[in-house]
Image (cartoon, rainbow, N blue to C red):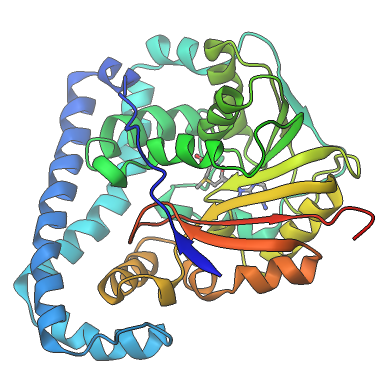
Length: 363
Ligand SMILES: C[S@@+](CC[C@H](N)C(=O)[O-])C[C@H]1O[C@@H](n2cnc3c(N)ncnc32)[C@H](O)[C@@H]1O
C-alpha cells in the first residue's frame, strides 16, 4: 500500500566551504547555478505545453510510450530546446570546474577535507561491482575520479551550487533529516547506512538516534574519507567501511535498522534485490529496513515522471528508469520482509520511502 505523508518540515540552513575557492571558481560555479535556475524556469513552460496537449496519461504505466508521445511536443518548443541544452551543458562542466577550483586552492581546502585519523575500515576481499564504475551524474572519473571527490562534491557541487537551486520541500538535505527520524521505532542500537557517501544521511541518523552504534558502508574511498572528516567535525562516532552494499561482510543479525538514502537507483535490479537480501541477513528478527529512493513513475504526476526520465537519460543515470519502475514492495516481500509500506516524503516529491520489518522468530 502506498501512502503520502508530509514529514519534511525543517529546511536546514546551509553553511558552505565553497566560498573558500578562488574568485574564478566562485564565478564559474555561480554561472552554472544561474543557468540551472534559469533553465528550471523555462521547464515550467514545457510543463504547461505538455499538460495542455493531452498526451500525458493520468498514470504513467509505460514510460517508453509516454516519452514517445510527449517528446515530439516538447521538442517543438524553444523553451525545451534551450533548457535541455543548458541541462546537458551543466552536467558536463560541473565536476571538472569544481575539481579545478579545488586544485587552485588545494593548500587551503585539503586540510578541511581529510580526517585526523585513518578512520575508514577496508572490508577484506570485497571488490566493486562493474556497474559502480560508471560516471553517475556526469561525475568525471566516477566516484573516486579524484582523491578528494567527496569534498569536491559535497562542498562545491551540492552545498555551494545545488542547495541554492533547491528550496522548501524540494530541499534534499532537509529530507535526509526527516527520513532518518521517520524510521518505525523510537530507538535503535545498531544502524547500518548503505551507500553512505559523504555521510549526509549518516550524520542525520546519528542526531536522530544518539545512543546507536552506526556503520556507514560505501565503495568510494573519496566519499568515505570526507564522511569520516565530517563525522569528526560533528563529534559523531561512526564506523565507515569500504564494501559493497550487497556484500558488506558485517556479521549476521548485527543490526536493528538497515537504511539507505538514494542508493538504490544507482544499481541494476539484480543488485537492488541483493541489497534487500543483505539487509535481511544483517537484521535481527524484528529489525527494520528503511530505504529512500526515487519516486515510482506510476505514483508521480505524469509530467514529473516524464521529466525525471528525460533527466535520467541525459544526466548519466543509467538505472533510474528501472528503479522507478521496480516494485520494491514485491522485492522486499521476496527477500522475506513483512509489513512493507511505501510512502512519499511529501506530495509529489521524491524520494519515496520503503519500510519493512524482518519477522520475529515466532512469526
Ligand atoms: C547518490 S550517493 C548517496 C549518498 C548518501 N546516502 C547521501 O544521502 O548523500 C550514492 C552513493 O552510493 C554509493 N554506492 C553505489 N553503489 C554502491 C554499492 N554497490 N555499494 C556501496 N556503495 C555504493 C556511491 O559510491 C555513492 O557514494
